[in-house]
Image (cartoon, rainbow, N blue to C red; front, side, top):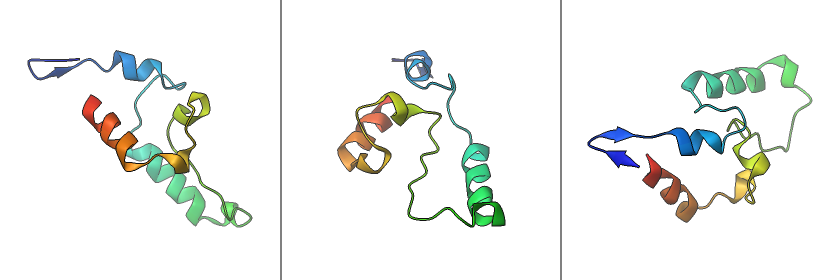
Length: 76
């Protein structure tokens, strides 16, 4: 809950197996890997860079629709 401009991220972090919110570097690392020759055999896949959020969720990464994303954005 937000109190006077403060957001308590604890409930959200508890739902993320990595125990922390993602950082831009987390996405950048995934992009770097996919752009490298190490990922030459990776194709036709959806890579969720979410700290395991969808691992313990009833939603698949590609099923995150606008309504769900708006709900998550409301937590911010």
